[in-house]
Amino acid sequence: MRILFVGMPDSVHTVRWINQVSDLGWDIHLFSSNPGLPHTELRNITVYNLSSSRPQGLSESVRVRGLWPTRVGVERLSLKVSYSTWLARLIRWLRPDIVHSMEIQGAGYITLEANAQFKGRFPPWIVTNWGSDIYLFGRLPDHTEKIRAVMSACDYYHCECHRDVKLARDFGFRGEVLPVFPVTGGFDLEWMRSLRQPGPTSARRTIALKGYQHWAGRALVGLRAIDLSASALDGYRVVVYIAKPEVKLAAELVSQSTGIPFEFESKGWTRQDILQMHGRARISIGLSISDAISTSLLEAMIMGSFPVQSNTGCGNEWLKQGETGILVPPNDPEPIAAAIRRAVTDDELVDHAANINAHVADERLDYAMIQSKAIEMYQSIVERTRKS
View (spheres, rainbow, N blue to C red):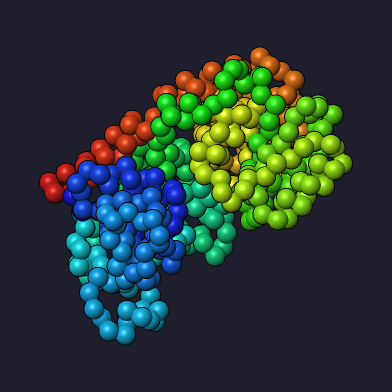
């Protein structure tokens, strides 16, 4: 089987998905939808990038080529030829069994343009919805028609929220909806749980806050909520991760005014460090104006931390409101502060939530189970295509 992925080569989400199938002996290729260097965790794949540079530590099993795999003179060094033209040429040369676009605003749009240029029968095309691809961007005038065009042209749609299935249909998708499960793959639950702090969640005295503050992230609202709930946080510390300088500055001011000690993720933190942080946290707070199923939410569930998550994703498809987590509006610190106060004063709540969320993780997040679904997904598409 030959699969051509179109996606961000430097994204860990791209890596985690592709690595589910890269050790099966299939012929796997990745066309870069942006100029980032290939992620060092990729393996057994050919990457077509803006340049053929190899980052230090990249596996020898990864082959890196310029955007077009043969010599084409000055075009190889020029951006005058669009990414979509390069992609159309690559598809004609590779003749993949499947083209899989991993997210819409980059990879999906590029593949749509390549499809329009393509002469002959375009391979079966899967589009995966990441995060806010439809839920947020579908409400923006600059993207509405492009999303509609992608949904009308692709053959298969994969997403991790049942909410987004309906949105895809509303945008004109008439193909086959693939099974709904996390688009970044599953988790090594046994290893992750070995990183948890021993004892019940109620014994923990750390609050984790995701530090994103940008077009979607609302870390500053989370800091304000911590400020409002400070009277209940005696003996607690706050760890802010993935925080830019402006968020660190605001956190330091909250620390000065409340006396709550704050710590920050350092550049040297690995994924294991992030997981251990969730495994020490009583509460994990993640706020954004739009998302699908946040990976940090799933990690908190696995690591036994009580999730306080914005209600603009599909956390409601994973959590029981007020029982296994609390969903909150991302722009209003008052209900977030109320959620924090409840979670730090109700030991039974957080311990019960940790137990229930562990069962949910076993049923829906195990790596081997998700990998099996991904493999079956590709095999069934290729079998049906060959029969037809």
